[in-house]
Image 1 (cartoon, rainbow, N blue to C red):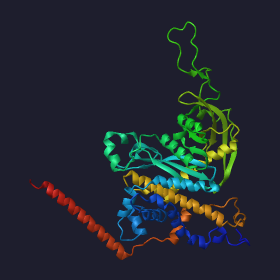
Image 2 (cartoon, rainbow, N blue to C red):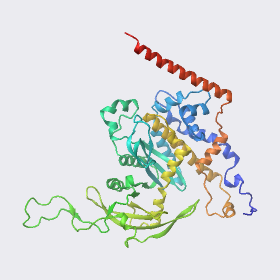
Image 3 (tube, helix red, strand yellow):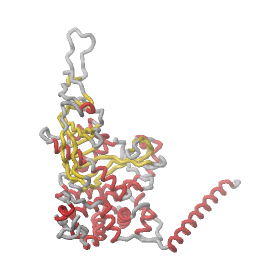
Image 4 (spheres, rainbow, N blue to C red):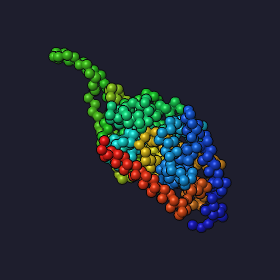
Length: 489
């Protein structure tokens, strides 16, 4: 490609990355923490500086983001991680205040109004059943039922920006039996927690977002939630617009069923009919049978420009009827999309009857960003690296990772406004849309202005010796206990 007279494509200023903005990243992270500082205080202590240490470690360390490594690399090489572990695992500061403030700050940004609130769950395999919430359950990452923890997560997406805005650890039924009572107390599971399904946790998060004034336009969720007929009906009753994925075996009606209690035929023996049923003999059909049905006509819909090119899908939508568990009849959009592998995905929505196909297609595609939230939280902020048993450790770790995602999203938003890119780059690079900064890009810049402590060979040797001595003392202590237990009384 020939060089344009507008300048080099490698000029940082043209990409909205002036040196002053990059050098200010460290101070920006500190300012973000300052705004949230009250969230990390308890009634008796202010150990909020630990939150900044953890936040910095999550954003600048590449791997091994455990308590010891974060404290040593961020604070000092002589640290052992004890203060950070106490702050994360035992201190009673409220993680939900962090989520509330993230939602409040989103509300204050007009450019984020009208986004999608995404609901999804993420599971992590466990080596044992002693972690809070651990049990045999479906883990999406593993694609099977296995021993693990699952969190229900609320995300938010608008115009290329995504963030985590709420989360809760799912507790399987056996965690509320008498055998787990002592463990619930020891692992700091809140006393007010009761048995709730994942859909109930998701509905709770939606109601909380509404109460906080989170400016979402539509809720997007996967088939775990979409298959729940009562969940969709509850959202509709709350005037919440949704685009919910459903399994391919979901049953819908192509004509409106009439529900009622049939009249008792003259001369019928026995008691009269009392149970409602479908009176007009309309039969439901599986949505999988409708992908090539003449009732639906697939047509290409262009969604947006993406880094891999123009994003276009063959889509179709028609209004169908469904039944709630109480046999109330509801009219919904059935949206069908042909995927890149020639399979089909299916969704239901309570959008207005005059909603264009293009709008339904955009909403369906936006749910993809729930996965981007998980990808960034795990690969860029170490969400899946937590090694701790207690509920507080899980929720605190998740809240600080959510704050890390918000710091990156807010940085990108502010830089777009303060340091606009050179519009000539698009024509010079022959692109319709330039790639946006990624979380990995922001972390790379942050590491440059906030370098971590690095061990010298001598310091590393001293730490190894200290570790060996401590292990030796622990072994000696256990041996002394064993000797005393074997000694004759």
